Image 1: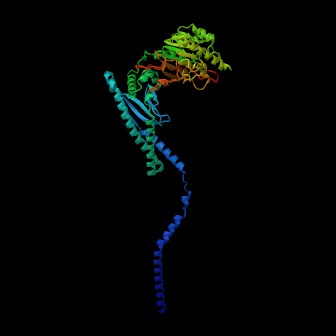
Image 2: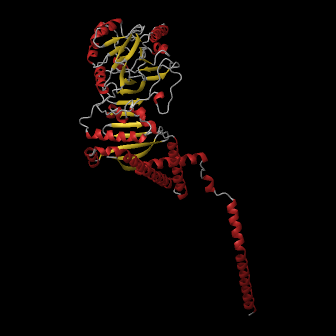
Image 3: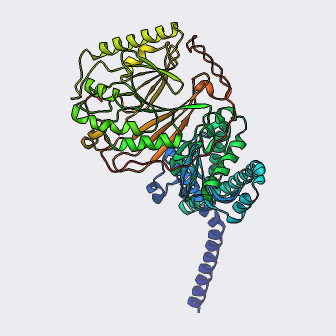
Length: 564
């Protein structure tokens, strides 16, 4: 019995001790758990030590890449608007670009490029189609053309505002969507969208700050439109009507409308009767395709006189003289100076051709109301070799020409245009004549020298001749149309014409204005004091569109390493 009581007592004691231990554990468990958590927090987690933290610059670069790519995709997908502009349906789009500007695509006629602004955004305007109902209304009611200016301005304004809103939505949506796909964090995605909107606003502000409404005065044409440089006004009217940009825009739309209406029979070029047109050609180098191109330009632009600054031949032999026979039928007087590939045999043969005026030793002639004087190249290097004393010879020839120009001015018969083949000889006439023409370099340049004389260097109208077969890429066929005032005989504007060489059919015409003829310009004090100032031109109207000639796949070449 005693043993039983002892066992029961021991069991009760153990139960009581277990209860006390359990209660004590429950009381100390939260404190132990807190200590454990604090210890774990202080101790670095092994997994955390293995995660690579990107460099801050790398994170910024990645974010910018996402923003730019997303914004571009947004503009590409939804960043365009359909806008009716006058009688035409157009599509306006913003595109990333390093140069900015505006490009108007008039399919199938070509494109018109304007340096309207400088920003990393280009405005593309695609003329989709001519609305038959609206165009027929203009044809049936020509009096509506007078109100086309306001209509076009309103259409463009509404389209631009709509495009701005659409572009903002497009870039924000594109950048946000791409940011969400890449980062999978809403905050990062919203940051990308906000940054894209900020960049677009900055680009828009830059475009607004650099906006140049007078860019329509010097457009660049390509395609079939290159045959119609007067779509935005001729050499006289663009100078006198620069003050109202909307008028020029309305004229552009009106003429494009007419071009669409008569695509099969494009209207001919109507010249301004108060302007003298000079076609400057050079370095034909025996390319037979050049004569057809020159004849087409003479007819299209109603050329008054052709000036050839030399290197018509390649070797100057008597066997080549028959190549010159088409000059008699070009449709305009032909003023010529000898180049370093033209021999005295060539010169004597040309003197016998009808309508040709050969200039040498400073001889002066009056053709089409302009007085010309020129000198032949003192070198004859048909093998393209370089004469060590050539530089001195060119300077002496130029000095002789300058002396003749001074004598002509003293005699009361001042020369309007001087002509030499080598630019080094032409530079010696600085201050003695308003304009001097040269060639030889096979690329186009225009420069106003220190004495005020303007030097025009023409490219190769023959695409560098047969030497195109020696190079990898063809040279373009180049020529220029110079517009001179009939009263003062001063340069008003010029068109640079470039045709693709050796089988290419591209064509570009770029309109340029002298600085003194641009809006707000004053007469330059560096111009020769003996020359009369340029008067304010009177407005006139034009319409053009005869298709631009393109060279046939005949040799039209690249200059070799020798002298041109």
